Amino acid sequence: MGRLMTRETVLREQICRLAESMFNRGLTGGSTGNISARTPDGGLLVSPTGASFGRLDPARLSRFDDSGVLVGGDPPTKEISLHRTFYDTRSTAGAVVHLHSCHSVALSMMPDVDPDNFLPALTPYAIMKLGKVRLLPFFLPGDPAMGDAVRGLAGKRSAVMLANHGPVVAGKDVEAACNAIEELEDTARLAMLTRGHAPRGLAAGDIARLIETFDVEWD
Image (cartoon, rainbow, N blue to C red; front, top):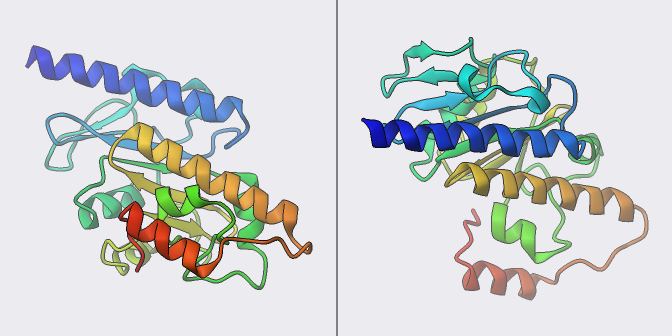
């Protein structure tokens, strides 16, 4: 038990440190965004409702046991069902992050984006870290239908973009999930900066080689 608690303490501090870093760099502002991670005993740590990424308290993170029962901390984010759906449908998910990042939200409002492949192939890194990103329609914040929409993907996507709202990314651990969602925002920023300038993206052959070389989920 002592060892598990020590690992959980480290995880709590890591969640708060990464969240604060994203807040300080303007990736999600105010009390927006939420983050969760699997604990060593199969439970969940989740950012509380109404909490700011810039001021998360490791001791006040919502703590669920391995049966999904809240056993400690503050009440969780109202979008907990969205997080649970990723864990339920993706066996590799060890963490989930949701941001209200500016450029990805802006790109989600453009009329010509591909809902099945939201990000344009501008650099290799979004492809390597995210695969295809599905653009989902607008839902009211906290609507359980968001989780239902992700469940309908049957675990085939590690990342979705909620239209007019923000991205959600699952990763093998909290650091991987944060790295991937930052790559999503960076690519969306590139897309918006180059919009209307006919940028030279990656060729179909380049994308195919990336998928094969780095064993990318691409479905």
